Image 1 (cartoon, rainbow, N blue to C red):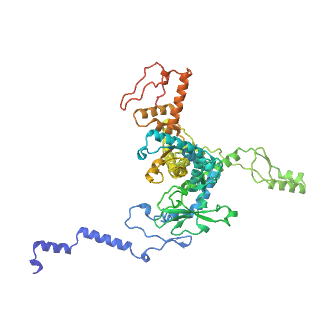
Image 2 (cartoon, rainbow, N blue to C red):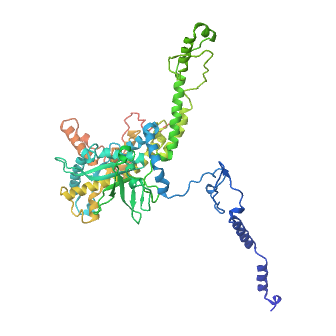
Image 3 (spheres, rainbow, N blue to C red):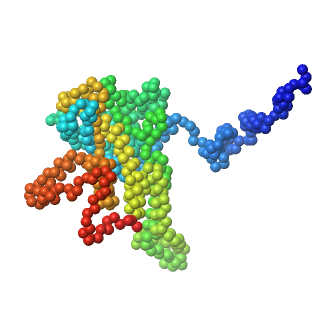
Length: 568
């Protein structure tokens, strides 16, 4: 059958195949562009040279839509690489730690930033409050309260003593401070749970040893391997199983030659902890921590240099010195050669330093031209304040809290405090979970094993053990800008059932509700017994109202009350 004899539909299909559709033409065009992009590098233009050396140009993505991935003129020399976490971190740790510590020692901003974080996260110390799971243990609340009181009493005895420190220098609350400082400054810290020597009339053997990050390193300072990086040994599944600890600090040149390494498993054969590793893990596979100041080290150093230069300029501008200029003719006529040489020698010894009240002899023909220094610089404070915002952003702390400068309204200052306190609360919970709670669990296990504390099923069932070890950790409160307003807000939260009195006490100053309640009851009873207070005065004016009920408005006594005046 000829083509002319095909059915009409078949002839149309044949013509369509002979004439490509617009879609087919577009696909062909795209294929041509891809082929051109994938052509050999020999057809590409010559590569640019920097400093007389050819620069390797990476292939450019032909279909990517992100301008940040292109090698344009502005981004051409930005080629950071794509190493894994340990590759990007470990080889820079020595310099990061050294510079971070130097800034904390010598930069007021860096030292203040670290002190602010430690003061708000740890403060006077995180206090343990035992909160056993009564339902899981099947005990009554009264029995639980009695058991908790006994455990807290024995824990305080250990935590408040310097014998809990392997170095016998700090109590447990001071160890919290040291551990956090070390982690912030060095990137990570280690806490070894050791059995200290027995002391007379001291029933506890557990002690905590804080180990600086530098001491955990590869044996003989060797290179990293597939299972050992930065002194951390991992198993085939990637879990950290042990740390290699040097007997001396690598910076101690005298002891470094005789240094030895000890392999310390993180957990023993029984599963109990031997070593704690305090670090903030930012990437999968990251073996070591990064100093908190790492993102802003360059900025802080430049700020220190700038502030030092401004101080020097201001001091020079304030120095009042008298310059004695000698007439050349009088110099030659009045002094012989020996005297002239002596005067010239004394004048050349001046190093240019200005001292207030000094009289400086100039050589004949010399004169002083003092530029207008314009110091103190009126732009110094705005400039430093702007960079303080950068530092605050890098640390996750509002610059008002960092600089301890609250010059805005009540609402703005409170917003800054709340934002900072949210960050501090998260890091406090991290410190409690990674440092305080594990140590408490090991201490409690020692007490149960020694028979000094009764906890049935503690070693038989991990669920039961977790129920006995359950505890909360509270510390200092955030403080308040307007105590009256915040006290009213706390009462409102309790009245509508959002919080309890125990919650409000913990948030206010980290205290224990039961302790305050017993003390308050004793104070009221004593005041009533001594006639300083009547029972009617001791009773609350109005009990808590039901949720949704309207507040009771006291009668107007005619006095002015401007405490709730809106902020201006």
